[in-house]
Length: 514
Image (spheres, rainbow, N blue to C red):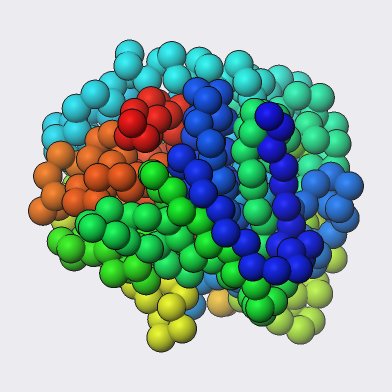
């Protein structure tokens, strides 16, 4: 029996549903999980807080995209506002707006999880069939080097000139038009996000999906989760529309992503060991811009097609980082800087000749690095506190130098940091200027598009929230299948890890239905 997608605004009365499995969230975890569950013959309902948007409604406009496709209309940030948090909020979650980069979970990270966190059953060989299935369905393949845009070529050219590793990345695309619009919704469905792959698969198999429906709380009965109560939100806002969707289910799977899944558990009073929201990791990101004499057009072309892991391992006591490129549409470019007025105008006037390179720092792998904490605001909305610790400050200082060297080696005539007072360099002889610059919160732009942890997995309830099979330690019929279950950051873009773990979790969730 074919299912359906129901937009909240179409509901004229309250809704009551019963099902085998309730999946909360439609992103990388929820979509892959739901498709497998309906394929197994289970009755599945999915609730998604964001709107249902497709290529027919994508406008190629940043302003509309931030309102319709991002958490808090693109303004989500840490509690002290020092770190901007880019996270999707629509049918398909962050897969609708991410930049398509796909990596399998690095073996060294899997070994760390086993050795430090005691997680068994997550090794390279056991995950291989799950990753292979995902790669086939999503068309994940290496982007041809000759199709890399000039923004990414700057990283490739500069790193290779310095003798550093750099190579093309793998992307989940089919028929990519190389438009550069990944972050505002692909206009040709070339990006194989969840809204064009696993969600249609699941709906074809019987999934009933409600969009613009935000879960307030989970309901409990006799120590088990019995379902959820959700409110219909007006599209593009948090205003309620006065209608309620209530679902009763045999099993519930939280798939709202890091930040949102911990917040829902906290709102529901499900934090018996006090671990919910702890160990939240974000791959804190800094950027450095290079000005070139030739056209870069960083707003066009595959946004992220080259990367370097030259500095991923800096020793046991230093935080590693990896390098990628970022698209530079005008609004995103503006918000990434601390500039205002004429200074911002001059920056944007040079946008066609700018290349934006990023350094993503790998948190959670060093001893004592506990990342951030998700808690609740008085309104019940999530709050993320993320301390910028000394190891991160040291790594950001070093990665600024690395990115500046890459730009200069690639031929940039000027390199500028994203400090409140940008540091400008025109030759290697200027690199010592970076030693005099301040680093850390509020000293320069910091942002994140990767959120992990907060409901971390592990074998013991005293230091984790869910077991390695994603089942909650104390609520037997509750699972968490999203990036919040990751015990550390990854050192690579997280989407394929979440896809693969969700594919693996299908069997565990299905078995719990009984």
